[in-house]
Length: 92
Image 1 (tube, rainbow, N blue to C red):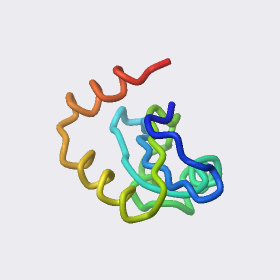
Image 2 (cartoon, rainbow, N blue to C red; image 1 turned 135 degrees about the vertical axis):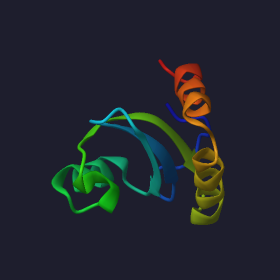
Image 3 (cartoon, rainbow, N blue to C red; image 1 turned 180 degrees about the vertical axis):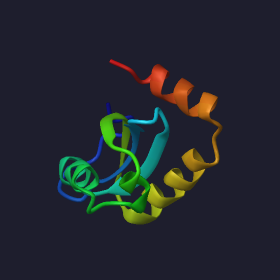
Image 4 (tube, rainbow, N blue to C red; image 1 turned 90 degrees about the vertical axis):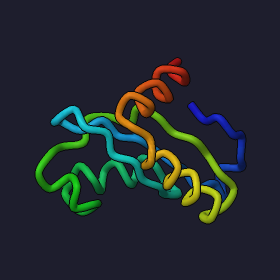
């Protein structure tokens, strides 16, 4: 569910993961499958040490780390309701 088409070779992904406590975690990476596995195994962010990642519910692709980091920051500033609207607007 990418909103910006970018070559997958150099793409950075901004993602939102739904956690087992129904919270939403936002991050960036270059390989979403690998990063989700890291979160699930406890090797990712400390955020998931007290909860489990359930699924990636949103993602956007960017051509470089800088633009992905800026978008990550923007999403992190959103309220829970605003994040949920973003997810709902881009649902398949």
